Image 1 (cartoon, rainbow, N blue to C red):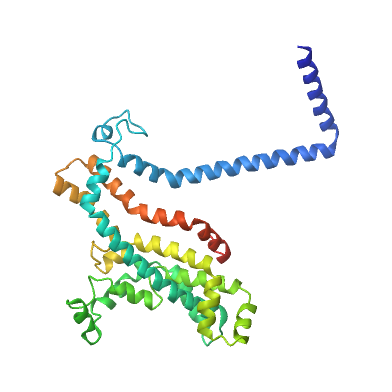
Image 2 (cartoon, rainbow, N blue to C red; image 1 turned 120 degrees about the vertical axis):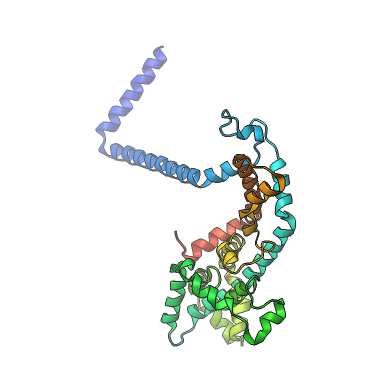
Length: 330
């Protein structure tokens, strides 16, 4: 008891000393402000994380619910009888493995083409002077700002009758190129594919941040323009390459707008097939309850996002570094 009294007296004495000393008061005030800022940061981070992750967590939880859990009012977060039967049927109706492989091949080829084209354009804007450079770069910025939906009609009419010299008919066996992936490859090759404006901007910002002495040393050694770009500059721009790769794979794999606009087959664009999964479950398996259909839809959605999540986790470190060095915010 006496020890506690002495401890309380010493604590009160320290408080009085602190209040009597202006320097100590200022230090204590700064420590209090720092602690409050840390608490505020954690509250904001936890709140934002909850807003972003709550729908995903809810979708995963719904995908493992049993039929009884779906109608049980006592089930709030964790299901009482978790099951994977929803995944089994979703895999069957999506023809998941075949469709996912085709979608990944299509996505990866588009990504490689986008990397080559956008990196060359970005390098040209960053290092060379040519007529109308500012105007052309302004067009790149406009590509970032203008939503794709505002120009969907011109894009559709451009490719609807696109058949130069009858080549498209000979290659596809059908009149025109609608209903194939050719429009997406053409747009990507010409630097106006999905988010190509943003990718050009990322490469431009990154190449501008690299020292010019690297190129000058290569030119002195007799390296040409293309050799310097492909063997030196592009190698040093690996963080930007990783950033664009992740963005391109995620957006291309999840793209529904262009897939529907160009009538790309469901067997190639898994993002389109997931939209019809609920109807397929109702027709093929005679499951008429909307609540149960939504469980199968959530299982299919988890299966669709799983490949891009794995890719992001593998490239996360380089992706963050590339975003920081390219100056992309927001």
